[in-house]
Image 1 (cartoon, rainbow, N blue to C red):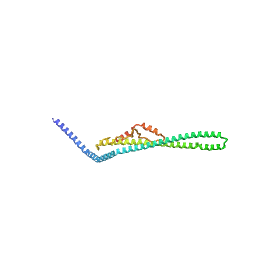
Image 2 (cartoon, rainbow, N blue to C red):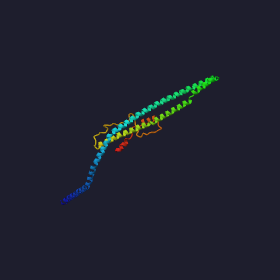
Image 3 (cartoon, rainbow, N blue to C red):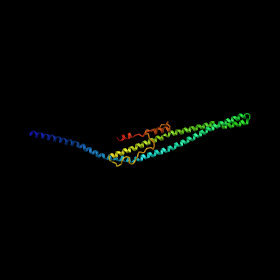
Image 4 (cartoon, rainbow, N blue to C red):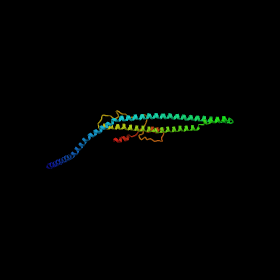
Length: 253
C-alpha cells in the first residue's frame, strides 16, 4: 500500500513538473503572441486602405471600359466611311481609264481614215496639208498615255492607303483585348473584396463584358505593312477569343 501511494505521489510530481514546463513555455511564447497581435493590429489600417483603393479602382472600371468601347466604335465608323470613299474613288478612276481607252481606240480609227484620205488626195497639195494638220491634232497617244499612268499612280496610292488603314483593325483588336482584361480584373477585384468581407458588391451585378459586336480580337495584334486589308480581315475573323484570362488569374493567385 505504501509502495502504491509513493508511486502515485511520484506521478503527481511528474505531472506538476509537466504543468510547470507548460507554464514556463507559455511565459516564453507570450511576448511572441503579443507581438503577433500587435502586428495584426498595425496591419488592419493598411488592409482597410488597400481595400478602399481597390473599391475606388473598381468603381472607375465601368467608365473606363465604356470609354474604350465608345472610342473603338467611333474609330471603326470613321475608318469604314474612309474605306467606302476610297472604293468610290477607285471605281471612278477605273471608269475614267476605260473611257480614255475608248477614246484612244476611236482616235486610232480616225487617223486611219485620215491616212486613207491623204492617199486618195495625194495629188491635192492643199488637201494633204489640211489632213496633216488634222492628223497632228488627233495624235494624242502620248497625252493619253501620261493620263493613264497618272491614274495608275493614284489607284496605287489609294491601295496603299487601304493597306495602311489595317492599323484601325489592329487598334480595334487591341482595344477589345484591353476592355476584356479590364472587366476581368474588375471581377477579380470584386471577388477579392467579397473574400475580405469589405464590400457588399456582387461580381457582375453592374457591368457586363463589352466586346466588339460580331468580332473576335487578338491581344497580340500588330501592324504589318505588306498585308492587304481583306487578308487582315480574314485572319482576324478566324482568331478565337482566348486572350489573357490566364495571365489575369496569375495576378490574383
